[in-house]
Image (tube, rainbow, N blue to C red; front, side):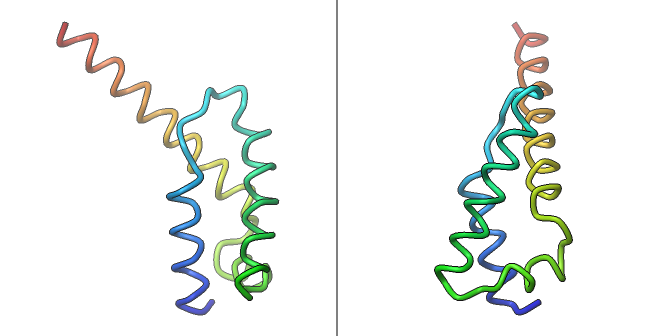
Length: 83
């Protein structure tokens, strides 16, 4: 995958992927994957270039959403422990 495509995907995920409840992750990942594919096409990056490097972008985004949710839960638990 081109460096341009990698930079695009990293930036886009960083901008769009935020902590969600576990119940909403699959739906949010599906929506964000469609948005990502559309935006990539707008800037001239074929979805195939991204998928060649990372596989299914919906799965990647779901994974990042889960990580964000877990980090948020951990942070909340740490904050409660300090109180």
